[in-house]
Image (cartoon, rainbow, N blue to C red; front, side):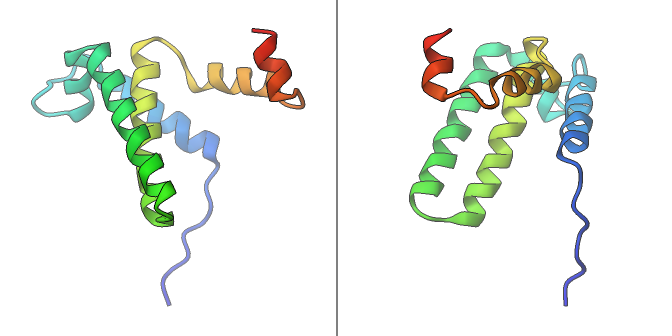
Length: 112
């Protein structure tokens, strides 16, 4: 029987990942994938976010649960690189989501 991996606090995981991503700014692009994306600029980072979003959607439509989860992880990873490049933190995103809790999506969008 496989060893059960304990659940982790998503906040902790995302914050640790974000810190790691931020620490790659200025690193050698030949040694770090994240540094290579920072080096290529925001347009390339945004392109990668788009690619991962499409791949996630394709896997979901095809009903591939595991692949959807894996592509979702890739999407979130690249989105966090974009956040770091734009000086946006996971806390910034969490605060926005928290303010929207309990508000109809239609109402929230109409009030933007």
